[in-house]
Length: 72
Image 1: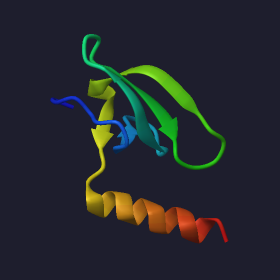
Image 2 (image 1 turned 45 degrees about the horizontal axis):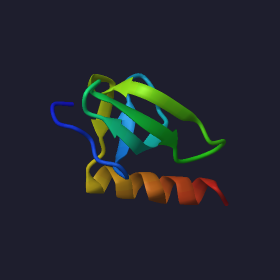
Image 3 (image 1 turned 90 degrees about the horizontal axis):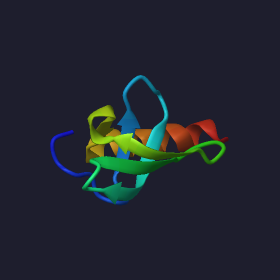
């Protein structure tokens, strides 16, 4: 990730199928705090930006539909 993520953006972490939301950004350390969007609340602190990929609107919409259909 070349630029700083924004709080509230949906992201995935390399190697993980879980979708997260950015809850905090540290520009000096180039890290972010992320929280899982589904299941038990999982919080990761100081994750390097290089490990994160921001989901575009289409990917985020597909995630929301998938999660909504799985909760039934």
